[in-house]
Length: 611
Image 1 (cartoon, one colour):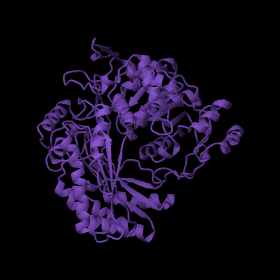
Image 2: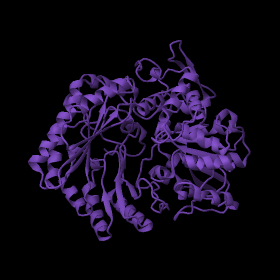
Image 3: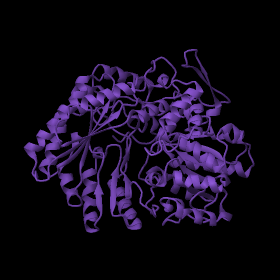
Image 4: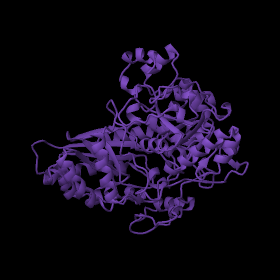
């Protein structure tokens, strides 16, 4: 640690964010290192250290001979101010070396509202923002994560994107860089070669032109770049790297526990869910491997809680077998086991009773819509009877706290659908009155509504987003129909969701807006303390861009979409078919009941889809 940093740490909140030195971090002898990678998470330490994907790729790269991957996080505003005052450049935790000294700078992007953080981190590091300004092999900037499935808003700043799951493609990319550095390639030569790795998208190899109405006229690849870049997946998760020797944070983080990924993909086809489509096909781990990883992780880290994670954990075929093995271990070692992402249509009272022996917690369900008609539109494959039946089982088992999540602004939604949320909530309350085994503590129903954001690579990618004013009207309508004191209602403010829709569906013209917003002071946009909507509005005005073009306008099915260069394995024709099914109010069975022909199975080389 530098003397300057040591003097600054007592002046900022949570100094442990910036020191490194945690148990299980990777240290290497610089003399043995050929390639140094600064792995940047564009949010704070406590958010980034809770990210399983970052932990996995950190371990993958550090297993490579001659490669040292170090962690970098967005500094909180007090530290950023201190850095500016003392001219201290952004550094990596393991070595405390400046980021500008690294060969490669990797970002993982899971949330569009982190875009300004990326620019701010590059600025704090003293690295040119624009890819075109960075010459030579030093400071190659690449990115991955779910937001890379529409790479265009950040195309000006990122040298290339790695699409899909990173365990294998990251090794190929870093190995190629190792070769390029040894042979003194030019940056252009390296980008040419890296573009030949399946799953790599190099924005500078594609030229975008536009019609007079602002829609895209053509996306033209150059120099042999593929017309479409297909994401990468890991087929055999049992054999994939998993960090059982996880870094133990020296300060509290958001998910301060062990995290066990049980499977990837989703058998459901909720038409609003980007992850449900972009992470297909389903691939699972065996319960034997999961149990071994759970025990190894807990014994090495000393955590007293472990979470089974996936997009829909209760859809894991071997959940009973796995929990039957894990629960006795957890009970004997005083470890809490949490199983989030449960669905109301396969809620297991038996499982929840077993979990009660470890810790009593609230239940969370996401009906998403208040009426059956609208749940069929979004293909939730969930009935009111299943919701009420699951709540009844929980109340009979002693639960008195339930959280219900909904969205407002879904395609075809009417006021009747909005009021249907209130009707459903009152039926839950009535169910508690009829079935609760423990009425002394009373009932708390936490209701939350989110502002629907149409996302790329979903059947709703063409949809309009309702205006913020209309969203707030629907929130007030719903709130006015909540009369019970048992209900606690929260709704998302529309400003961030509007910007999320713009940046999720934007083209590369948005790069100027993001840069202007960052210049206007936008940063830490996911945090209420620092989010400045006005900074973004000023940026749109400065760049002559109307955000409504990407939101309330909606997209035509025959227009070229900014993300059409990216192939997540689900065909566009399937998404169009699902959109028509939505407007017809027709449901599509989940993958376990019938293959709907989305196309994702074509990504598999050796095994069938594991649904």
